[in-house]
Length: 324
Ligand code: PBG
Image 1 (tube, helix red, strand yellow):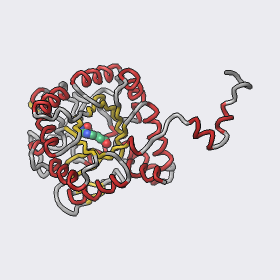
Image 2 (cartoon, rainbow, N blue to C red; image 1 turned 60 degrees about the vertical axis):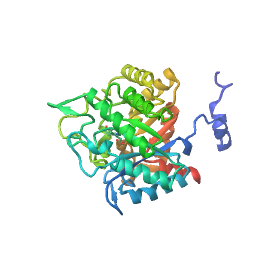
Image 3 (cartoon, rainbow, N blue to C red; image 1 turned 180 degrees about the vertical axis):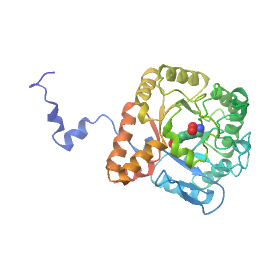
Image 4 (cartoon, protein in one colour; image 1 turned 180 degrees about the horizontal axis):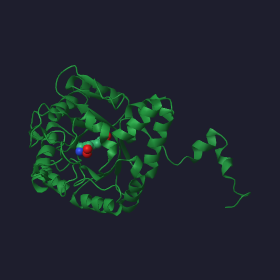
């Protein structure tokens, strides 16, 4: 294929040709919209660092879920801000916890919408870590028992899929075994398998009111320098029973998404995280970039890298664009 026989520009000359040879498209079916739920009623608190995103009380959440469904987005992932935080994350696995109530409410009002629940303790612990803490150390095995309890209570409330995001070792196995014992063998697990210790989670921690009160998450989340380790993490989660594996964040980790897709050929999700969203929104507000164009390019790049599913705060905006 040599010039002048091959002239790539021929098939770029007009939109007709371009659309014929286009390799990647993002559709509304690829998107999952994250939502934050908190106690109260009539609450719609804007999240300062995430323009267009809100902490919602259950009544407001129902309206939002309806809108999401009407836009054709297949599912939401829910994060909870509990009434009260404590050392052992009690509200994470309480039957009347904020997430459990939210799940029941959405299931009643919008039954066809897929409800995914984030399974992690950091929003519910007073110290803000994703596991139980003893003498400043984040404990693994006692934590996975609680995560399994949390997953079970979310599923009992009606969650369609659970998504463990804590990065404790062995949690997928613990959750799978617990769900199977309780006759929930049909409920899939989407594991945050390669989750990095990333500064891109900053705005989320404001949204979920979940920053660690001491230290950081580097003893459980992955070192951004590593990529072979991501492959080992994914292999482990698949052996333990994960149905969908996730890479997170997405944009600074496109190489990881690609490797995971190529090496395993399983459904891959990518989380276009809060900081990635904030960067685009911030620069767009300043008039430095075209926010809509950049959003589309970002989502396209994540899909092109190999993601089948994109969790993104852009989901509604993208769905509106696609509907035009
Ligand atoms: C909970 C969790 C986090 C995110 C998703 N689940 C925060 C963290 O690990 O600190 C981040 C999502 C985002 O930044 O949009 N562990």
